[in-house]
Each structure stands twice: as C-alpha cells, then as structure tokens.
Length: 452
Image (tube, rainbow, N blue to C red):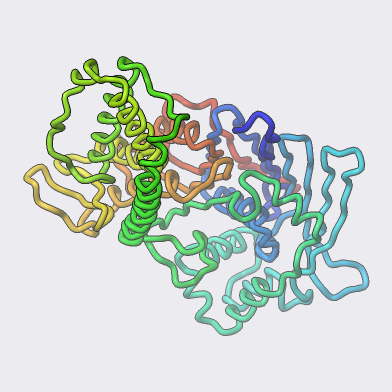
C-alpha cells in the first residue's frame, strides 16, 4: 500500500444483542492474523450472524427484517461505531431500520431511518410461521430462518403467500441515507466489493439470486472463469509486446539508452529464463525448446551488442510483468491443491481452464472429482481470484466434504492466503481439526439465553 494512502477502514468488532430473542454475541476480530473463527452448537446463529454482516456491508437492509434481534452494532478500526435496530417509526405504518453512526470525526454523528416494509400482523414472524403451519416460538423461528437461508427456500416459496411476503420484504427496502452510503463505501475495498460470502453449498448454482451465497458457482463455471481471465491477460501481454516491438528500433537508437554491465546483464537474463519456466509450469506460456543462447557469450559482448541486449532484457521484463499477479495466484492454487490430491494432479490449460490428470496421464472430467476435491478447488479459487484486498470474507463450515487430513491443512493455508492477499476472514466451523493449534483465533458464541 502507498504510504501516503490512508489505512483502509476495517471492522474490529461485531455485536448482536437479542438474536432470536435468546442470544447476545460479541465478536472481536483478530486484526493482526486477519482470521477469526466462530464456534458454537447448532442454533446459536453462526450462519445468521454471517448473513447479517453481509447484509450490512451490501446495504441490503431488508434482510434484517427476517431476523429477530434487538441491536446490531459494528465498531471500526478508526473508532467509528454504527448501530442498527428494527422499529416502526412513530406516526407511520412502516417497519424500518433505525441507524445511528458516530464516526471518528468530532462532528460525525448521524441518525437515520430506512423504511423496509409495511408493518402489520401479516408481516410478523409469527404470522409467517402460521402460514407455514408452525407454532410461533423461538425454536420454530430459528428453524424458519434456517429454511429461508438454506435448502428449503424454494419449498417455502412454493406457497404463494409465503413467496409474496418474502419478496415484499426483499424488494421494498428504501434507499439508505447518503451519509450512510458514503461511510459504507469507505469500508475495506469499498462498497459492495468489501464483502464476499463463501457459503456451505459452494458447488451448486442457485436459481434464486437471493439465496445464501448469492448464487454459488460450480467448478465448471470457475474453470471457464479462469480461462477468460487468462485470455484477457494474454491479450494484455500481446498488446504490450506489440507496442514495445514497434518502438524497439527508435529506442535502440536513442542516446538515452543506458547499457547494463555484463555481469548484471547475465543475472537479469538468468532471472528471465527462470520466470519464463515458471510461467510455462503454471500454464500461461507454451513450453519452449531448450534455450540455444549461451549466457557465457554475454561476457564477450562489445558495447553496441550490450546496448541491444540490455534493451531486450528490459522489454522482456516489462512484457512478462503482465503475468506476475495472475501467475502468483495460480501457483498458490496449484501448490495447495496438488499437495492434497492423491494419484492425480491439477494443472492449468489456457484453452480449457482447469485440467485434472491422473498419474497414468489420463484426463479426468472435473465433475468426476469427489465433492471434497471440488470444494477445495472452488474455495481456493474464491479466495485467490474473486476478492479484492481488504475484503471481509465470510466462510460457512469449510469442513464440509473435507477429509480430516485436509481439515488440518485448511487453516495454515488460509492464514498464508489472508496475509498475501490482505483479506480479513470470519469463519464459522464445528470442526476441531480446522482450528488445530490456533485456539487463540476462536470466538465462542453465547449458548445461554439473554432473556429471563
């Protein structure tokens, strides 16, 4: 990060009071390690907590109507505090979100009301439960929210009354105040890009765009996405090469050209060969025949030849620089995957995207991989290719379909990725193998009731 740029605004603490009318949760994020682990028994609201955080960072305030809670409070690294609570504004017939923001600035106090949906008995959680034939209580409300967020969402929407109610809540939210929108845009990487939810059902493409994951992509779609990314990068490489090649004669004849010493030139040439080899290994460049150029010949260069070779090295470095970020991400992906795969390897093909080959050199269909293998590729692709620096990544139950050995490797890999990619991760898990020796990263969600 540029030293002159301000530090990005990150979330330091999240507090939810009265969740389901039962629980109070306070989550302090690990700012140094950038990974925080939520744990607790089923039903205390781990997934709902992640969903509320996502809803806030996306400005999707209608989601808050679906969750019984008293107060949602977010504290930021600059000391700013934002609180949300659901109410009916006096003199109106609308449910809405009251928003209070105290920023780090002396005069940074704001209050607002975001109209979400019409109030009245038809919009209450109890009435929604009655539509489903369930007894209104905390337990059934909890299960209802799980249904709304999970696999049973489509079944719920099969009832026209339930569908109308959920859609009404989802579509009727009023636009947030400008001061809140401006503040939210400062968080993380800015605006909607500051949050990324990796849900439990990572391998399924939901038809309902408002599903928990917002539409999770399958491994085949990720393969096509990577192929497209490679194509764009190759196009940039081609354009850069064309521009440099066209101007090469003019720059060669320019008096400003500054030749390198022979030893330095030899070092840079060797580094370029190593970079080319790595780009070939990760699938970004075609395999080239063994180099016919003898580096020892550089010791015999005369002045004019040295000038030509210096410009060649500088141009080649500039051309290959186009691949640096993509190559780093692909190498991290391949290293992580291929240390876990048995009797098969993942490689990258410019024309196909992901290619899996057995030790017997036979290609496998991606769909033939186990669910655990697919989950691992999809999850790592999400982390490495679909998020921006200082994004808050929410991961729900990463242990699903992962062998115990892979679960033990998951957190060390994640800590490395978080450091390199400069992302914050809030993860919910039941697995002690995921946590391993990193109990210091854990936050236990309250299991006692908050009500008498």
